[in-house]
Image 1 (cartoon, one colour):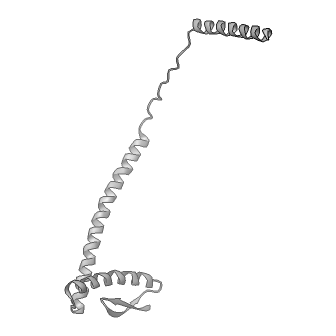
Image 2 (cartoon, rainbow, N blue to C red; image 1 turned 90 degrees about the vertical axis):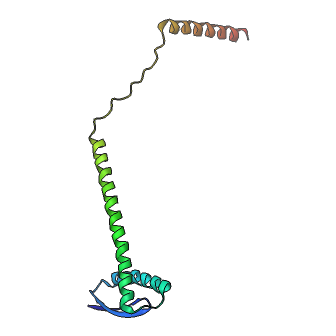
Image 3 (cartoon, rainbow, N blue to C red; image 1 turned 180 degrees about the vertical axis):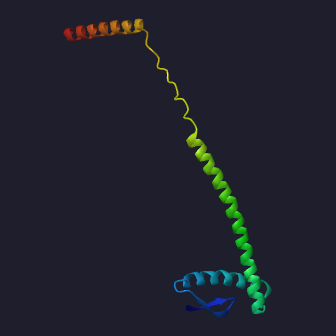
Length: 129
C-alpha cells in the first residue's frame, strides 16, 4: 500500500491507499479540502472532527444532488432513445408526388414553325450582307 499525505482544511493527514490509486485519493482530498476551506471561511476555526464531518456532509449533499440529476438525465435519454427507435421503425412516408407540366403539342408545333421562320430570316440577312 502507498502512504500519501493529503491536506484538508489546512491540516495534513497520512493516508494509505492501493498502489495506482494515489491520483484518485488526491482528487478526492482536493474536493474535501475545498469544502473544508469554505467552512473555515464562513464560520472560522472549528475542531478537526467537526470540520471533517461538516465538509463530508456538504460533499454528500452535492453527490446526492448530482445523483438525482443523473436519474433525470437517464430518464430523458431513455425517452429520447425510445423516440428514435419509434421513428426508425415507423413506415416510410410516401414519396412526394411531383407533377411536371406537359407542353401541348399545338404549342410545340407553333414554336417549331416560329423557329423555322426565324432561321429563314437569319439566312436572308446573312445573304444580304
